[in-house]
Image 1: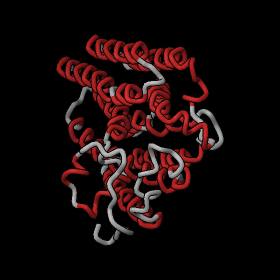
Image 2: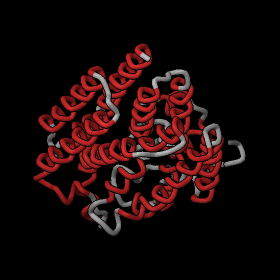
Image 3: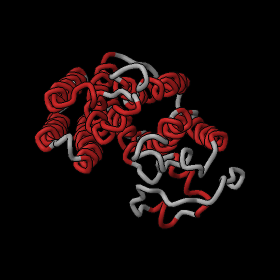
Image 4: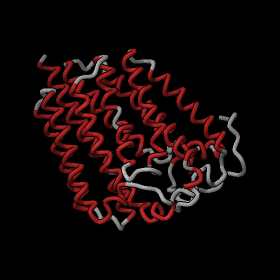
Length: 317
C-alpha cells in the first residue's frame, strides 16, 4: 500500500467510533481501510449472509459437508474484499454528493485524504484479491461471479434516477444466493433463484431502515431512496417486504425438502424481522442504525438453522 500515497495529512473522521482502524491501523492505511469500510464491517456481513445461506442449503441438498467449511471461508474473504471494492467505487462516483451530506462529507475522497485516482488504484487491488478467491471455484461459478459486476457498477447511479435504488442493491447483495449453488453444483435451478428473490426483499427492507438516517439530506441534494418513497408508511412497507422475504425463503426450503431444523431457523429469522418493525422509529437515526446492523444477527440465525439441517441430512445419508 505504500504505492498509494495520501494527499495531505490524515484528518480525523467526523463519525469515528473508536474502531480498530482508528485505534490500531497504521496512519497511512486508515483512509484506504475506511474506503473499503473495514472500520464498519456490517455491510460485508450482510453481503456474506446469502452466500452462507446458499452454501449451507446446497450442502444439505447434496448431503455432503466436506467442502462447506472451505467454501464458507472463501466466501468470507470474497465478501469483505468485494464489498470494499464496491464501497470504493460508490465513493468515487458519489464524491461530489458525499460532500453535501453531513454523514458522508468526512469520507476519504470528499475530505481530501485520498484522490479519486488513488481510490481507483485501491479498488483494482481489492478486485484482484476477489478474483484470486473466485478462481478457486468451478468455471460456471467464476462466470456467475463475474456477471454480478454489471449490477455493482450500475448501483451508485440508481439513486439519481429512481426511488428504488434499494432493489438494485438487493440484486447485488443477494448474488451470493446464486453463488452458493453455482459453487456446489456448477448449475442453477429453481431453488437458488427463489432464495435469491427472498434475499432481495430482505435487502430492500433493511436498507430502507438504513436510508432513513439520511432522508433529510437526501431530499435536499436530490438523492432518491425507498426511505423517501415510503416515508410515514415505512412500517407497512417493511411488513410487506419482510413477509415476502420469509415466504420466498420458506418456499426455497420447501423446494429443497429441508428438515425441521432449517424451519426453526427461518422462524427465528422471521421473529427477528418482526421485532425490527415493532421497534422502528424512522425519526430516531441511532435506532435506525442499530436495527439495520441487527440484520447480521438475523442472517446468522437462519444460517445456523440451515447448517444444522445440512448436518442432520448428511448424518442420515
